Length: 123
Image 1 (cartoon, rainbow, N blue to C red):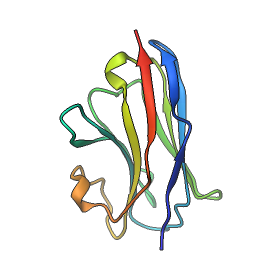
Image 2 (cartoon, rainbow, N blue to C red):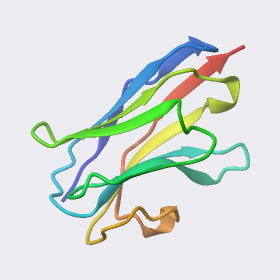
Image 3 (tube, one colour):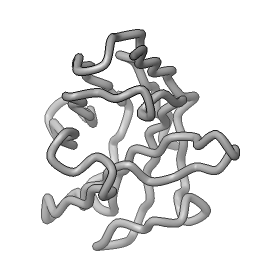
């Protein structure tokens, strides 16, 4: 059983930075990703990483601003968010998918989810 716990959310001004953490990922294969809930209540992928290869994926909206990384020794996934914009305001979720070697973009393909952490960016 994988239990994911996010932390690190908060409120910042535009241009600021936050680092999200997701503890509890004991997977040795598969992928992990960060999603956020859009205003129309959909979960969109923000970034993902393949556990074994380290390959990464970023949504166009966050490329060059966000960085995903995993500390395998600590079983922790991170999302470093720099240059935050008001449109980044959302609930952010960590997710894990077993048995793949790519980053699925469909949230329905993930096996495990955290409870979410709120990020609020003011103008």
